Length: 229
Image 1 (cartoon, rainbow, N blue to C red):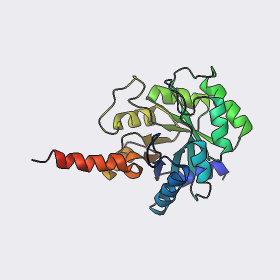
Image 2: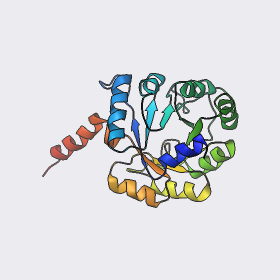
Image 3: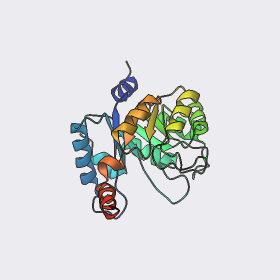
């Protein structure tokens, strides 16, 4: 079993926890994110998704695979948008590099296939997760050499409507259209929806806000009280 196959096997059927904070928030600190990641692992996370070079480095002691990304810029493509970003994420220690896997133009002018090929040319052991917005994105990302597909960008590219909760339909569509593992991600807020995503064929399920973003979680409860009858 190759190292990459071992990484995939350790994630299959498991929960990926995304530990991210928005800029200028009290928790926007690399060591804070690393501590949250360690706590998530204690709770049973099979992998951790981290944003930013400092966060990835701060969590280098994790015992589960790290999916790393770098959000940068204000263009449509901002999740690890260029080869330079992808190389930096891999060099920081990520086991899996997550990048924009849509069919939109990339800021550095490279195609997705060129980006993946050049990344793997320098980091042959790293896996690539393509964050997609539709099944059509997934088909292209698979052809471009990605190892994992994610539904991360469903509802954010204009190709599909933004659903109130998880887009279970796109999970099923991507699983049907592609052969690569599909990680369900995006607006998954309850254990029952995690189960529904898995039932739709997801290889693994990623949850972020509902576990690691206390500002949003608190607002859910506060809003419930403010709207009580």
